[in-house]
Length: 305
Image (cartoon, rainbow, N blue to C red; front, side, top):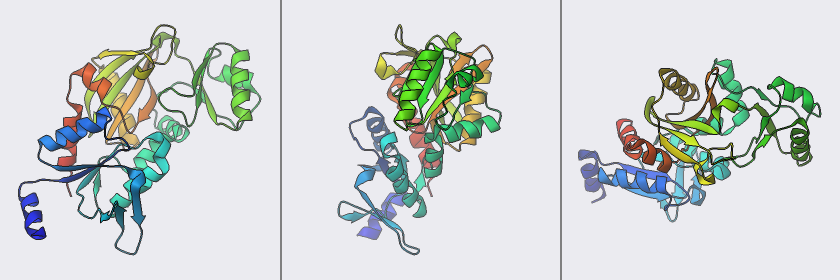
């Protein structure tokens, strides 16, 4: 019976897809589930923290709630920043089992390390806001000069979704913030403030080296961060050739097959602000009127092993 079932599944190109997500009710998880089921795939949403990794010679596997996950064809990681370490270990284990992952564990790890990704992208000639990183240095005035003077943006390395991102409008404010972070041994970047962006940025959604959606986000009045969950708004946006080129190059160099590239519009052209390896789908689908979840499932189907 088991072999008959497998034969039927293969005959009709049905895939066993696992979405690695801690919350089945999240919009992005629900949309991926919905689009995969429309194609008649067999889909499970699995919390990566409930997976147990069995590492042994030639037969790596994953044990989850009383069963071995040795039947999976592909996974779609939706790994939150707070569970990056274990979540990526689970993704890597699936990769060792020769299961296709829509985003590789190495690419997720590289993109989550803001400092590492900035260093790597700058070496490749991808423009971004001027940035200074030091080992808890007290020479703060000099660092502020190097990024163009106040105001400056101070970012915690481990911050996500706008948390730990502060605009310091004077040297005294910047010094106070950095001394507080240094006292807590919290690593932070000092970054150039792009005044001409006026609290707005662009989110470019990329799937398989193609732009599948774009939006312009605008922070609420008095807020320089444009995050939608902080009261920002979004609208459909037509990217310029230069914006498309820099977004695709950044994704390609970090080997991210699916990602959201955030750009700032500056007087010297588009600047890469951040790259998100697990981009949310709600804002971009609403603004762009594009079926991003369907594009992701199509990409997974094309790469079935």
